[in-house]
Image (cartoon, rainbow, N blue to C red; front, side, top):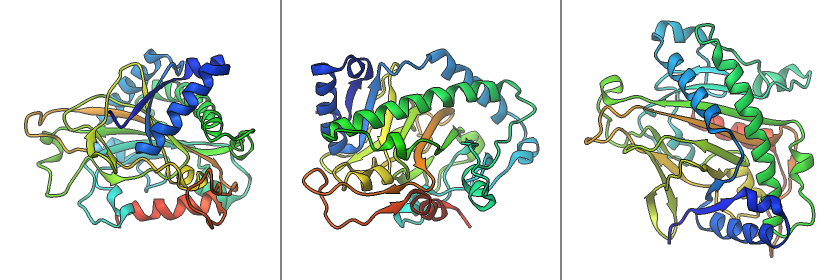
Amino acid sequence: MNMVATVDLSRWRRGGRAADEVAVNVDAGLQRAGFILVRGHGVDPALARGVRAAAREFFLLSDDVKARYSVPVGGHGWLAPGAEANAYAEGTETPPDLKESFSLGAETATGDPDVDRIWFAPNVWPLEVPALQRLVTEYTAQMRWVADELLALFAHALGLSTNPFAAMASTPTWTMNINHYPPVSVVGEPEAGQFRIGPHTDFGTVTLLDREPGAGGLQVYSEEAGWEDAPYDPDALTVNIGDLLEYWSGRRWPSGRHRVLPPQPHAPEEDLVSLIYFYEANHDAVVTPLAPPVGKVSGLVPVTTAAFIKERLDAITVA
């Protein structure tokens, strides 16, 4: 049995027995691996293609030009190769990840300069690729709609009478990373233990991934099967839950552990771009874990979204 279940949001929208069946499938799939494939999400595939094409235009610019938009990890702009080592979040020291990223996020400023500087900094858009802002703005609006729908589905899957995230994610923090995984001719031969993205879990509630399949592609970890290539469906988003949702579920659902393989010897010139939407909750939301019998662990204390996620962001930054 494949560890990653496929669910159809169009059946969830029907309500009734169809919605209940989807919820049961979601619960079982997330318990296995923290990942699901989501069909029927309603996002126009042409929009994702447009975002990816505009992003490739940006990544083809010279490093000198891209450096005008350079930011540290957690910032909104260009993250140069070598900026992150995601395996550090697990306490594993690895060489830096073999990728570059363009990152952006929510701009719903609170008026508190200390909060806004970290969580709601203005996005910076490359003047050299004017289409990117329009395309990404539309894409992230659709991703938020899907993320909110998934959180409602998840609450139903746990048998809750209401969706607590309707209030906890009213003005949420979120980040979108457009990740570019260059070929060997650009990044050089991988070092021992080096990945395009090292083994890690995401930090927030739910992550929505539009990916290109590849030899040096996504792998998903489960206790039952270990590391496996993630299944690919061109009509589906690859969705995983993050550490915050794992915690909220009382550790019923494991945060989806994953990695992206380095360029492979049989496909050294493979060049991939992934669109990754990381959804969280309101920066000041207090997340209270679900107690048994829904949750699996008792005694977990409430946490604030901002403090929980900031600790993890700091861990993956290469000094």
